[in-house]
Image (tube, rainbow, N blue to C red; front, side, top):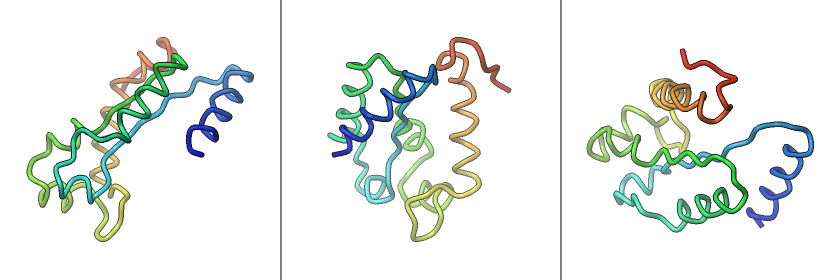
Length: 110
């Protein structure tokens, strides 16, 4: 279901000349279990490779922050799977560093 829906979105963006990329990041349960090599990541990496679209794996970036307790308390909203202000800032800075590669130089990293 996910692949079908994402495939439709990729086709739509391509029809309209819009650049798309897919990014994955660990959910808190994956952080707790130090699950750095998931089927989820492999699935989306292969999906992107087959369609020649950029894939951004945020797992190494997140896990480089330290032990699970530190990652969860510093990067995620309590009791939620979303990043807090600090987590969004970290990922945003990293994404901006990737932007020139993803947009063929149309966006300059700041």
